[in-house]
Image (cartoon, rainbow, N blue to C red; front, top):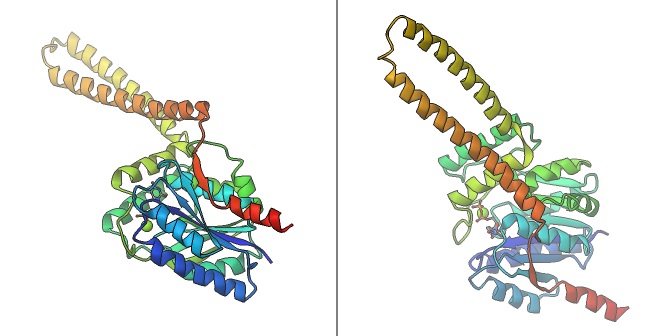
Length: 323
Ligand code: UDP
Ligand code: MG
């Protein structure tokens, strides 16, 4: 029987955890009872440097239940890093890992069918079959984002977020992607292996507010695009070529005007081209800057997170004591 670990990234989730953990525990118990997963399966909460009572709550649950564990970051490192930390901790201790948001917006009742399907596949994506609970703005921006990613040649499963199951070997391969600016949804398909999907309707957040304000979302989308594609650089290069051609045409035009004696006119075209070119250059520089920024962070090879406390290490100690 396979050992399952469910990972929850938690950032200021004091309002949702007290109801989320019992719900997941119930699902885990049921799976254990039906002998679908081994009885030492566990929940792993990664506290992403919360400033509220999140860690105290995890700690309380940990002392009450033998199959709930927490890992605490020393500060906020972001959702993606919390997931990576959870995966690398769980990979050593479990055979199957499911990642799910702590607010349970992704339908936890599909977990048993994910486990079922994992017999024939290494990665099971949770795919949303509607976006009814999203605002119109989020729908449009999300669609635009997936459209852009697709046209930039990034193989992503549309409408799947970070709710998925991965097998041990899929995680091991995934963790070899050692990039700092990790965009998990783009990297998982690169790992390959057999994959499958479960469909679900995404719910409203049960309590608290989103930890992904617009600024974080834009950053996330930009990270996704620039981590996977050099297409923006090519677009800028093509634009540059076109602009240069227009410049040549304008030069010919102004020479003709000069010989016709009309040189006093043309101030407006001059000023527009100055502004236009200035704008183009700024866009080009900013895009190049984006990539240089990426190189900068990759070259530094900084640790992605720093775990302050890890309750799963007790698991090994207990096992060792038993042996
Ligand atoms: N999260 C995190 N670190 C952050 C921001 C969010 O670990 O810096 C977690 C958060 O606790 C939740 C998940 O990531 O479990 C998704 O966040 P949220 O539900 O706020 O995003 P939304 O569903 O609104 O996109
Ligand atoms: Mg959410």
